[in-house]
Structure formats: C-alpha cells, structure tokens
Image (cartoon, rainbow, N blue to C red; front, side):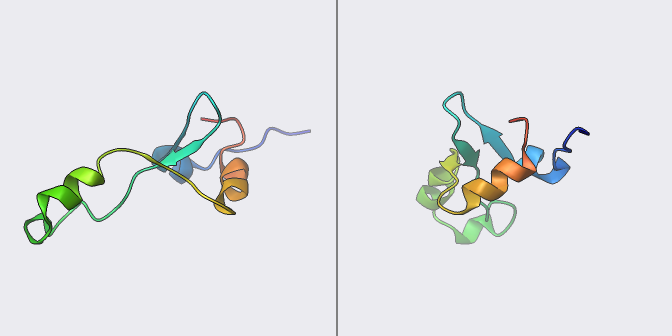
Length: 66
C-alpha cells in the first residue's frame, strides 16, 4: 500500500499536540490592525483547538501527525 501524502497547506496551518488535539491559529491579523482593539489582537495570539466535525478532515490531511 502506498504512503499517504500530507497536505502541505495543512502542515503549515495546523499542529498536533502530544495528546492528539489539532490546534489552529485565528485569522484577521495581517492588516487593518489599527481598527482592532489591542485586546482582540492579543486574544488571537495563542492556538485554539479544532472542534467538531473538522477533526476527521484534519486526520485525512495530516495522516502522520506532522
């Protein structure tokens, strides 16, 4: 059976923790920062878990847990 390919886009955007959770970063940080409050910008700095039905999709995109 051939090896499964990891999605290059997914390996840049998501990470998997030691416990198996898929983590993501929030968006809206590239431009127009002056219109956003400091609290909004700082609250989006850490990683958030991928929720619900997206977990199964992430397993297909990241078969080896990159």
